[in-house]
Length: 442
Image (cartoon, rainbow, N blue to C red; front, top):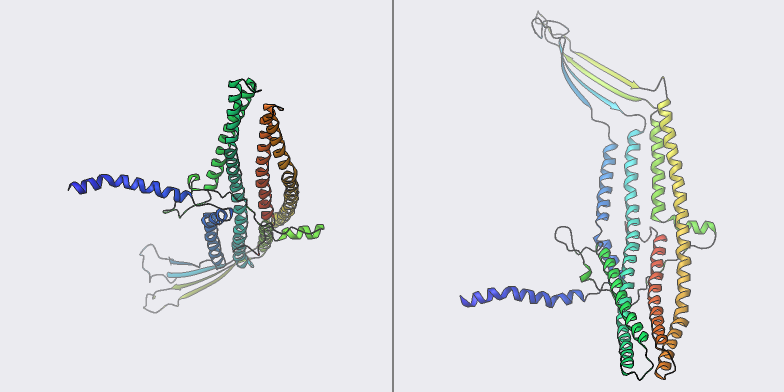
C-alpha cells in the first residue's frame, strides 16, 4: 500500500517532467514558408463551406427545373340543406379535381440554369480564396521571419556593445585613456536602445505569429489544436519562393495575362448569370398556362336509376394584355445589371494591372537596393567600423565615432533583412496577381 501511495503521489511530477522533456521537441520543429501555406490551405474551413454551397446550389437547380406540384381537391357540391340527402337532387355530386400550372416559356430551364451557374462560381471562389490565403499567410510569415532574424542579429551584436560599455567604463575609471563621461553615457544609452529594439521586435514577432496561428489549425474543430506562437519556430534561412512569369509587352498581351485570374473569371460568370436574368425577364411577356380537370360523381335518382357522372376540363392563361410596363421595367433593370457587371470586370482588370505594375516596380527597386547594400554599403560600413575602432585603440580616434560606426553597421545589416523580407512580400503579391485557374485545384 505504501508503494502504491508513493507512486500515486509521484505520478503528477512524472507527467510534468515528461511535458518539460517533450516541450523542446515540439518547439524545435521549424515552420517553413511552404509548410505554413500548405497547413493554412489544408485547415481552411471556408473551402469546405464552399464545396457544401456548390452541392446545395446544384440540388436547388435540379429542384428549380421541375414543374410545380399539382393541386388536388375534393368537394361535396350542391347538397340540399333541407334533408342533406345525397340522392335527392340531380345536381348533387362528389367532385374530385386536379389542377396543374405550367410556368411561362422557358422559365423552368432558365431557373435551373441559373442555379447551375451559381454553383459553377464556387470553384472560382475557392481558387481565388486559395490564392489570397497563400498571399496573406506569406505576408504574415515574412513579417514574423523579419522580426525573428532582426532579433537574432541584435542578440549577436549585443555582446559587442556590452564590450564597448566595459571598455568605456574601464577607460573612464582608470583615467588613463581618453574616455570621457559622455562617452560612457553614450555607450550605455546605445545598449539601452538596443534592449528597447529587442522588445519592440519581440512584440512584432509575437503579433505576426499570433495572426499566423489563426490560419494554422493542427486538427479539426472536434479535437484539433491551434498552433500557438510558442510552438512555432521559423528557419533562419532566407525564403526563396518562385516568381510567376509576368505579362508580355503591349496592352493586349498585358490584359490577357490577367484574364485567367479567378477574380476575372468569376466576374465573367456573373455576367453570364446577369444575362440569364435578362432571359428570365423576357419570359414575363409569355403566357402562364393552367390546366384543370374535375370528376363529379352523382347518386341515384328517386326511382333508383343511375345518374350520369360529370367531367370538367378547364384551361386558364395569364397574359399581360392591358399593360406591359411591369415587364418592360424588369427587362430594363436586368439589362442594366449586365452592363454594370461588365464595368466591374473592366475596373477589376485595371486594378490587377495597376497592382502588378506597382508590385513589379517595387520588386525591381528593392533588388537594386539589395545589390547596393550587399555590394557596397555593408562592406563599407564594416570597414568604417573597423577603422574607427583601430583609430580609437591607437589614441587617434573618438569613442563616440566607434559607437556611431557600429550602430551604422548594425542598421545596415538590419536594413538588408527588412529589404529581403519586403522583396519576398512583393513576390507573394505578384504571384497572387498572376494566379491562373490551370494550376488551381477545383
